[in-house]
Image (cartoon, rainbow, N blue to C red; front, side, top):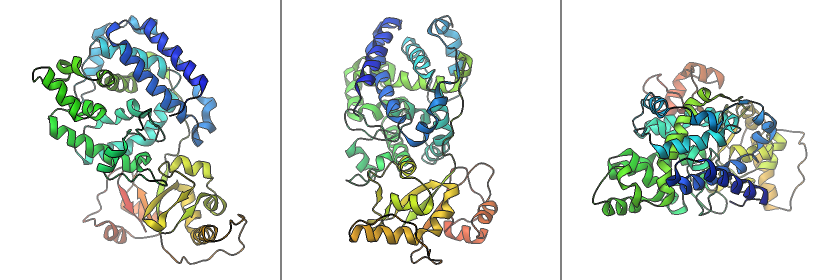
Length: 417
């Protein structure tokens, strides 16, 4: 990811601060690497549609946390809090973990508005998907370490998306990557791929901590570290033989888990940012250009880019496959009403000379091609409520989704049309 000069200066300043203030000398370089990675992803995140609209609010909270106050907290208190989380993955506490908690509290104190709001937006998807593949729920915090919850994040080595998939690993887990589409940036598709990959890594090592470490550096490097350690299979025992970034990866994950659960205890009181928590997905059957969705359905191209980060241009090549388009829920009806106009104008623009986007007097009342519409189940919803919302019946919903009864779960995708 390209960084402007001011970002580089800020990053170097922060690294110097970490070197000067962190008490654990052994983990300095690892802290600096992970901190720079987080800041790079976060800086890019601020350019997205919703955050640009609300960026003024991101510094209006009470961030009274200070390094001096944290340094006065006994180790026993931090360790006790980590034990209270009752996670499947051991929340080991040591000097390295403390150094990362200290650093995260410092860099997160004026960024937590964004992090908490993004967690509210993405965590229902993460939790449902991870659970469906037998992956511990706490791994939802791994996306903070990987990308600062930024679907558009790109690392210096080319990893992309919320879960930072490299090209070849993404392809292995069925993520399409070409000149028009990059599903590594698709929140839903990439989360499914991450859950599958983590499950496979756990099957290899039979240890979730090693699986997480392998997610960062690859199973080959973990096997090398195990061999060099004399066959030990505990992360902290093979720690000295791991790549530098991986040595900091597990402590950073534990620290992120701690901070996202205990930030109120450190005087951080974030405001919630108005992010698009309520969206639905329309599966397209024909090509679509964003400019016509903007004109006929009232969703700006900039908002569409934020909601659909997997598309590399303002064009969805749906004629080559069934691709989804995520829209604010209040705009779904407008899109369906204007669907034919959007398709027709897109087709004309692609096959003829560029057309001017103008209002169209007549909107076809019937659609020549039907779109598939999905609804993501939210807390408190039932099949009856969903059926009423979309003007259909429970029986039809059950038939379309192959349901044997009326039981549905939060985060489940229900086909409604």
